[in-house]
Length: 128
Image (cartoon, rainbow, N blue to C red; front, side):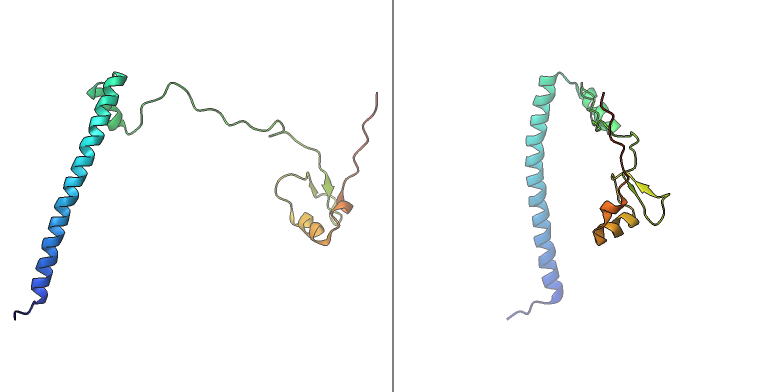
């Protein structure tokens, strides 16, 4: 009975790897042919030439579409100043509008449940 050596086992594995690589290349080739056929049909339908496609590929950017991207809409109050809603009882110079990230003094008041004590009295609107 012949013993298989490490070298023989490695040779067999290399052979299997080569066969698998060949099968992989054949499958990729079939897939590529199908995709290329679709691309050719789409290019002909759109009236594109090979030079148009080559130019787009070399630039690295897709061809520009007819429409520009839509601008993101901002809220009606975005960027506008708002009067402060809370004042720090320990330091009256510190205020907070009630928007955005709350300062540490506000977080401490919230934790204590006394945030309402820091509310700034708003003047009542004058009726006409």
